[in-house]
Image (cartoon, rainbow, N blue to C red):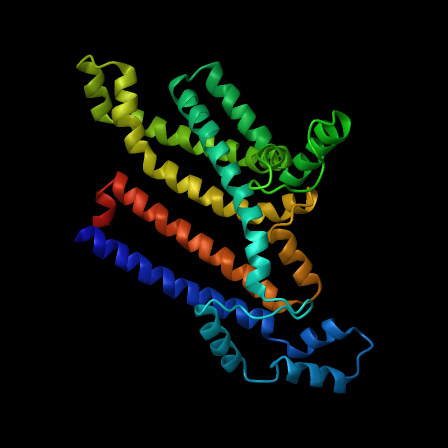
Length: 315
């Protein structure tokens, strides 16, 4: 029952947060009707043409009415139609979303696995290994991911011709083609995440190693490996899980640049093109999908932390 109450509270809070995010985003992108119509028609359009297009698109109605109509349709799975192409926004998102999710998910898994190993080793081996991990972390975090992507393309795609420089092959068409097209983008996106996550995991493990119960277990003669696996890692897991979830959210924004560098047909490139063309329904669709992903990830992290540390339910 406490778990059910905890989940219900988090789910209600997530729904309220989604409504607030969509309301704010809708207000920001639809606040200037004339600018939307003018950007679609061009600078040479007359005021009569702008007014006619605004009326055709329903932009002349009160903003609250527009948002409520959009919200009702969105709940039913209808995010509108593109102003530019006339295609349903849901169809465009369905094509682009798997690309971004595969890029971000694989990058997160790779970064988390490497960061966990580096963080634990750095916390346990406090000598030259620890210093080496910290030097790597500082260097990796100082490099912008788009610069890393350009360097990877120049070296491994153009120079050595080991990987394609641009493009994307879906995994259902060719597994090897998917791996070859996503390898360099994953490295570029995961590098800074590895550095920052390793540092956070190192700090969490060091904090747990300083606890009194760890000293007690050592005094009883328990093997260091058993203490680390059974006690230290479990208690260091909640902050590590939280850090990884924050990195996932950060990767969603970082994917925008990476997709542009490697010409990947994901949500990032779709959002950039829609913003340039003032294709507001598509922009709203991307914002909604991103917000839903962030809220779902945060909810999953809350449940994971609660499962790892039941005291979180009381808090």
